[in-house]
Length: 223
View (tube, rainbow, N blue to C red):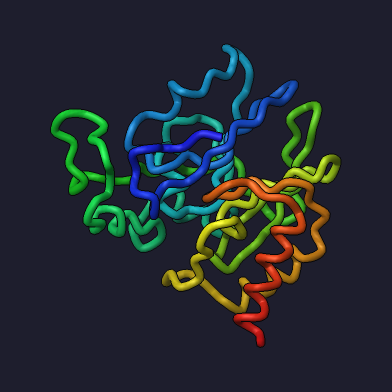
């Protein structure tokens, strides 16, 4: 897990680096306040696939730094231009304390922007990401955002869930959120045989805890 420790907790997201035999995988790219690519030590000549779980600011800030980018087809147009109506970069600029330590002298949050990062691979529900010695199935999990996806290793139950579900505050009131779709996602997750969930925020959790969170969400929103 990688994170940006001086970013406001509201926008501080988890990034996950997975070592594969043939390909390494990076899930999400944070806010992009400091360069991320130099921190990823994939061996020279080994491909690195970077997957964005959705197009919100705290997951795509450094996506443009990488040459092999994948993300949800549903949000492909937004990745190509990174409009603030999709990324909500303006929310970060409006925070009273966006960072606890300046990344460099003269840095000003008013200058914060997200660079366009067109996707080389468009991901749909059921697609597979093959690292050579392990494979992840793409799950379309809308609700938090229209295109939100997760990556599930069916062999060992590892689940990278993005913001679809995690152990922190689930956000379902953004302009592009859909609580009806989110409920459908939660019902799907109740049946997913996960062993460990690595979310876009907060700490990792096990399958029972994930199902407890999904069930609580359904009781509050369907009940």
